[in-house]
Length: 105
Image 1 (tube, rainbow, N blue to C red):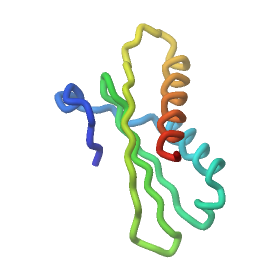
Image 2: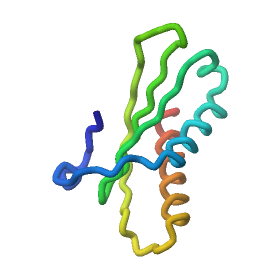
Image 3: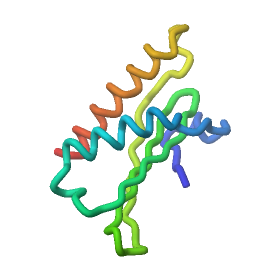
């Protein structure tokens, strides 16, 4: 499943990554890596801990049962003082873009 990186996260039960946030990640990956993901099935799941966001990306050929997965973990303070959920979500998306840029390089 999801392997939290932070020791503090291991003490908590995660919340699932909201479907709309997973969709944003999926659409972004499909747009940026269109050639690679052509004829592939892509899935995005994740978990939100109080201090960490873990995202699992899986992909496979359409006619295959074997799936390749990778996870990324970013520091994320879910109680950062913002009352607006949109601001928190935008912050999470920006951090995820940063993480995927690092993975890409």
